[in-house]
Image 1 (cartoon, rainbow, N blue to C red):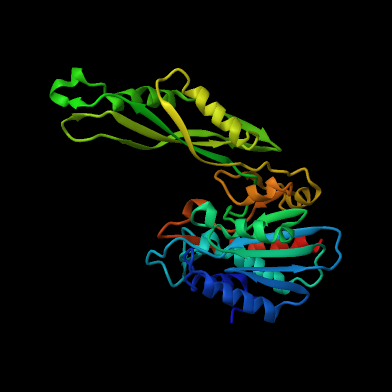
Image 2: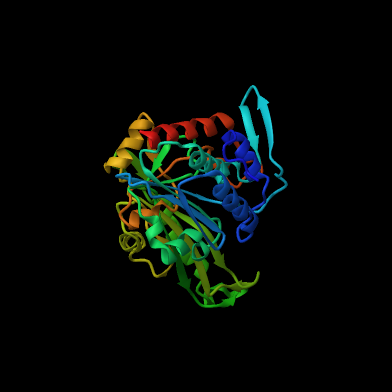
Amino acid sequence: MLDLRSDPIALTAALVDIPSESRHEARIADEVEAALRAQTSGFEIIRDGDAVLARTNLGRPTRVLLAGHLDTVPVAGNLPSRRTTTSDEGDVLHGCGTVDMKSGVAAFLHLAATLTEPAHDLTCVFYDCEEIEAAANGLGRIERNLPDWLAADLAILGEPTGGYIEAGCQGTLRVVISAAGTRAHSARSWLGDNAIHKLGAVLNRLAAYQPRSIDIDGCVYREGLSAVRIDGGVAGNVIPDAASVTVNFRFAPDRTPHEALIHVQEVFDGLHVAIEQTDSAAGALPGLTAPAAAALVAAADGQVRAKYGWTDVSRFAARGIPAVNYGPGDPNLAHKVDERVPVEQITRVTELLRGFLSS
């Protein structure tokens, strides 16, 4: 059985050594559930699919929710975990999920088992299928089936942040921009109308685009508008009659997805192209002025920055709950073959949260 009271570094290694690729989280969920039931007291514990939820009802004036996903991307020859010490990196734990995000999950599990007098009621949500399509996300299923379990004054997601508090998150929008032309033999190109060439104007707009930066609650969010895919062409001797470019807009959380779409349409206004939205997700405002969030920032000595990328904090922000990302590990190492986390970050994150949750 997982030892939740052990050093969270050792607990991280034990979690990493349980393979849990998305849609294959049953074993790790079983072990987390069994350990919580055996090694914690005062928690109501339930299972929802391959998610495990636990909460106290101590009558505290505030509730803090700790959420972490149990799944990882596919293993890439980087299991079992291993620990190394070098002059360059110090003491480091290697393995799939060390950064994203079993070290954060280990910190939360350890605190659930060892906090004796929490100042807040606690809810812990360990969920499945975060690393794949949004429709499969276990937190979304919990939101639909068990919405009362997500009520809180502050939500903390254990996403990797290098030990900083990363507030809110960017929104994301994808569109496909299509151009139409006339097919012809490339030896008689004047008889055709090249759809790929028409995308040149789209790419020129993207190259000239000046992204916005905006300060919200002391966090600077940088936007980005990028081509991420190009499709077109029929054969090596055919003028193409259709071509498209997929564009991803990462927008600051002061924009709604609808406002983001309008902005993208304005960027390409006047071009003879069609724009089709294929995906979008709202960002999350930092919400750092809320009392519980401000207390966490104070506990972290103001070490706060904006979150680049989309995370599940957006789900909480949509419910009016301040939410931040806070966990060990460099997010730039997530999903890499050489994924690794400095063990001192695991200790530091756990102890900062212990102080915050106890005061």
